Length: 168
Image (cartoon, rainbow, N blue to C red; front, side, top):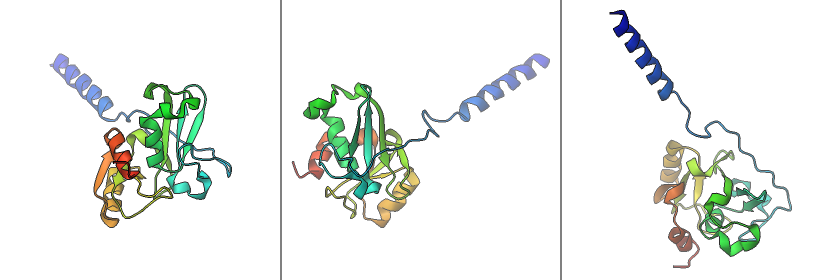
């Protein structure tokens, strides 16, 4: 009986440990160190003028690239070779991708964020994606602003970005 009790105790301990683990990079603090002269790589806008739209990608070669909106960030992400001077050959060259939560202005991991497509809110670059940290907040925002879809990072395709840019 003691052996059985020990097995049950160990099993419950292991189960408790695995269910309380945080997701990868959860709780990590993200920052953006832009100033009044920082410009978007894609659109050449001064990013400080519209802080709720700012995104950035850190590259393993030490460069940091800023964007005036999630749309611009994804435009670079999907076709980084277009900006060859940054030195990116593939997504493996990215070390960090950060966006700003539109409502809270918190800097968040883009790869775990939710992006709202088709809302009635536009960025300085026109039709865009709204970055929101949580799925629940994204649903509320989408409903309030006539959003068409809520997408995860890996669901935002190059074709969607071209559509938002009017290139399809």
